[in-house]
Length: 246
Image 1 (spheres, rainbow, N blue to C red):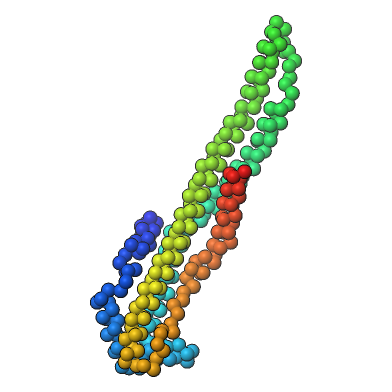
Image 2 (image 1 turned 45 degrees about the horizontal axis):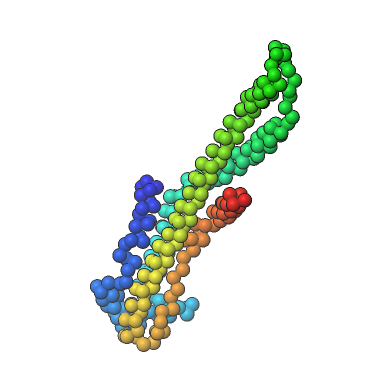
């Protein structure tokens, strides 16, 4: 699947009806399952003191599998963008250092006293004509440096724009993925609550509210290898903003 298709598939979850309130038919099915389990004294307390049932375990497993699959897809989708960010930070850093050196050299050269000594064949020129010639020669001499300075400024601007755009996209992708997983968790909790209430009607020995807590470390596993790099990206972005504001 193409990377853009992966992203569209992920974002489409935010628009699907599955994140809306439970439908009437779905509730009826959950009530039926809950009542049937209640008659069998389910959910049942485990050795860990948690009340669960095969149905609840399936919901938990689905949530964990969903989050891992979603973050694995995100990893594939933005892997090349992480590499591009790393390249851009290095490139912008090198170009900025070179620009600083060239700008200093230009400043030194421009502030240096102008050589007004007449050359051979200039004896009949006025002083102002000699000065004009020396200025033109100086400008010609500095032209490669000026040209390189402009090239670097343009390069740095373009790469900073690209860097900020990619960073913003990654932040958006991380946030949207987190939101998708959060909404799936909320929906599963709704499903378990309906099931639990139905089971409670048939077995009043279970707690009044579910004791299940949906957990997944998929986001931590995904962010683990990238955390230090993303921290560097954020610091680099802050430095850029500070320089632009200065």
